[in-house]
Length: 427
Image (cartoon, rainbow, N blue to C red; front, side, top):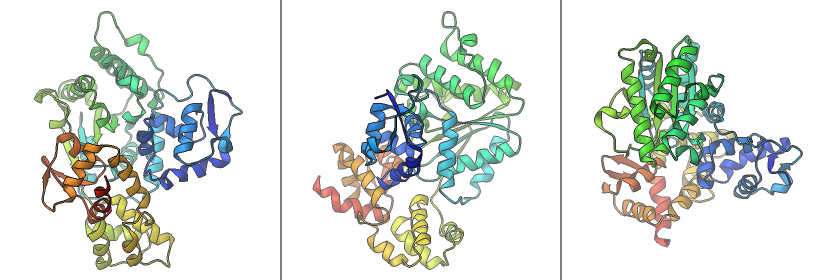
């Protein structure tokens, strides 16, 4: 058996469909569940070689017989999984964005375009999972590219665990990944002085003297899933401070005016940062809201559903304005024209309903963490706001299960209250 295995071409579409069938809304959710890099999961799903042990574990999780779907004819090199593979972030964003019809949420898009058109612009986008951050980023980057900007979308999920072990490792991965996305040669050896300089100075020189010097038009660097660096507090504090320094440099130095930053995260920032070293108190903040009834109605029309606001409000009474939950209902009803909204709502909190896979996925996460389960139970037993520990609140908010208001939370919609309320007592 070769060390690396890939999915047979005739099974690629089947394994992609298997991701949501097994309750994983996105590739990144599958990667997190198995503690694999996003690059490994992306390679597996696109018929590229991955390590044999990772291949079999992914097959087990997606309920495939690995021997049936494996193409073992090609033995590949040590670099199978692609350490940086940052170009894959664009492909994943494209796949996720293509799954949904985009709905604008004014004035967010206009604010984003205006910010990134400014020299040294910094945009901060925050929202729980499945709220449309990827779709917004993808549409934003496409719009800026049409205006002549260069863009890099770098998802921190592509970094391996070893990349976070030190600031040196992380910044080298970061610089190499941006180079790859810009289709430029990796020249770390030319700019990295480990004897007489520091990792931050080396990184700054690499950008200033090489990456930015190679780009004739402004460069938009979009960093997705920035929260993945938060647990590594020392590395996070230095890296985030570096981003703030670059933003400040743009005020006085022309070369840094060319760099525009987009920082995307799904949880509150719990890394201790000095006020003057944080990128989270400068720039323009964007918090993605839920759909309004009017926006949901506009989306329904794009799915060719002949709805009115009364039907929209019936759906939103159950799922709120959560973009993913709303879209799932529209997609299902578009594909099953004989089914009525009342039937969807009646079965929505069951494992057999249209949200069954997603609900089971979240339930599996919650029940494996006793403290998180206790926190969710506390939220479910009252209709009032509840104070939780920051980490518990952030974990539940990141999944979109609760609304966060300061240090207090409430359950985000009736669907979650009913589903988890029926199960939490069994723990």
